Length: 134
Image (tube, rainbow, N blue to C red; front, side):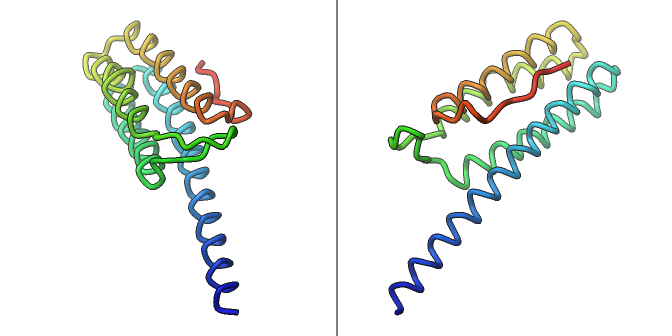
């Protein structure tokens, strides 16, 4: 009986963590779209602040479960993908927003979105769509 209770508790906690990550990533997507809208409206400081909130959602999600099972059953370490995202497209986005450079930030948004799609693809979760940017 105790063993059944322990297994049931572990399954419930794993499901809760998965649900939390799903909510964080959906929030990250909303924040990415809002960052883009703010940038397009030349609200540079607000866009930069929203980009930082987006980063927080993504990093919390990955850091809470850095190794995840792909759809093929293999274990994928997402930490290197997060690092690549942070030092690559996210860093470029921050820099372009700080410099109020519309053309650079547009390119950075496209790269950032593509990196998100790449991560989902690595996990074999191509059914998870990343919204296109306006």
